[in-house]
Image 1 (cartoon, helix red, strand yellow):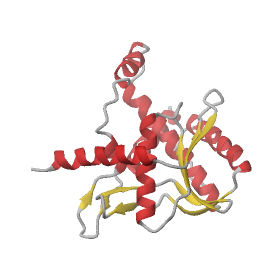
Image 2: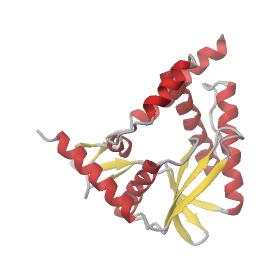
Image 3: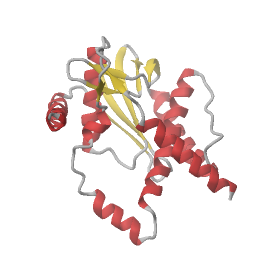
Length: 223
């Protein structure tokens, strides 16, 4: 019973951390975040997926919140590990910790062949040119190249993730940080999910798609 209570606390904490990031431009005006902007994209596959969970007697929201908590903890373990810090896991269940540690092991497997020297991690940035904000996971040097690493704990790498990556590259470059290439590193939560890396030397198409979605977002907000 105590374990279940701890899990509920973790879910509230994990989702709150991600959902309440606020971005403001130089004038102090709020601007949308990348995740909010990409929420404009239709995701028709989610409907049958949620229905499938329901048929199995699984509450969709609780399921998503639990996975979000694991993802949040895995991100913290990776970035804290790179920074030489210990991750506080007191408010997470044993199962959530185990799955986040599986993700961390996958990251270490990648890092052994791709030693990264972090420059900044989880730092909120704002684009004055395009009026949006975002928080790239890891920006640093892999060898002699400045690289963006976006961590995912999902079961697969989905198309819209590349639009998010493109948005982060825009943010970094506008804020004076060059990016040679950008990579999504998917670190699975269990052995079945495994891990994979996808690399982009150019995100020209994805950047244009993101800009169009951003334009739609701003147009819809106009009165």
